[in-house]
Amino acid sequence: MTKDLAINKKANFDYQIIDKLECGIVLTGSEVKTAKAGLVNLTGSYAIIRKKGVFLINANFPPYQAKNINFAYDAKRTKKLLLRKKEMLQLMGKIKKQNLTLIPLRMYNKKGLIKVEVALAKGKKKIDKREIIKQRETKRRTEKARKGEY
Image (cartoon, rainbow, N blue to C red; front, top):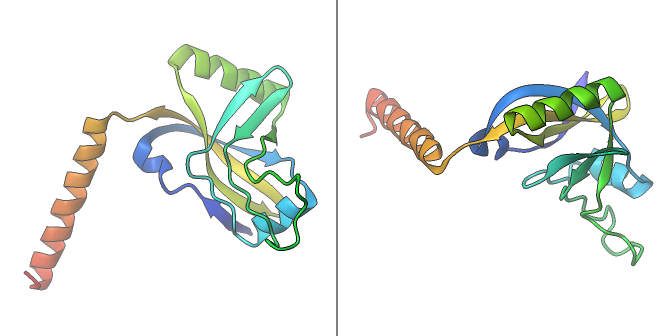
């Protein structure tokens, strides 16, 4: 049974999701407590691939106890994602070949371990986003008209 700890709500609006992948994440003790409390914010974060692995950048892990923190604590510290070398090489090939971005979709608890679902995604253009907003508006209006609220 998996429990969602954090969801990147803007991901589906800003990106066209192509492929999803599950990976582990390296966290410190206080970051684990923050994640299990559901305080993590994945909005605006992304992942990059370097020679030593895949890293999650700009994910916000606020302190678990705000009054009891270490002064060296960095809420947006770069965190390493755990992937097999074969998976990492496949991702590198797809990212370079198709000009894609690697973004986190959600963070969840699976058998006591914290996992991150990352996705290969392509950024949407402003026109595409406007179309989605128009479709939502027309859908809302038709639902209201059916219910007789208009």
